[in-house]
Length: 203
Image (tube, rainbow, N blue to C red; front, side, top):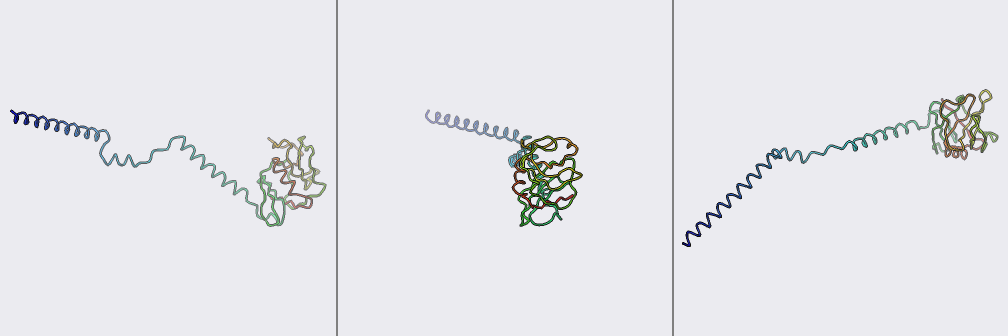
């Protein structure tokens, strides 16, 4: 009687073990069907996720900004044949000013908005009477830090900045010779271009 009971018990354990093994084999097969072959799963796991649209846009914007900065640096290079020594260099084509120290180092460069009358390329000198701290411009705008350096057919030409810091918009008013900058740049010009300072105008 005891042997029959033991045999029955062992048979039950064997059947249970076979059932567990069969279930595990079924799970493994189902997992392969869901995930594909092991090689495919490994390739999928190692592949980098595609960037989101937002990330792609940010990357493109960063590349554009880098290109713009590079172009700005090229444009801001001091023109060749712009004289020597301490001077102000004004590019008619580039609408840009450079303040150059005696050591040929550019201390500041910035964009400007010219008036309707351009000076001829050449070398000029700032006179004591050409400096005015505040006045009303020929276009009716209150300006500060005026540095005049020449006249063209009776129109005075020089650098200045609007008191409110604004820059002219649209076509310049006829008969105006003011070369306008932002307020901080105008103040830098005022400190740099004292009487006797050379102004070199390049095409």
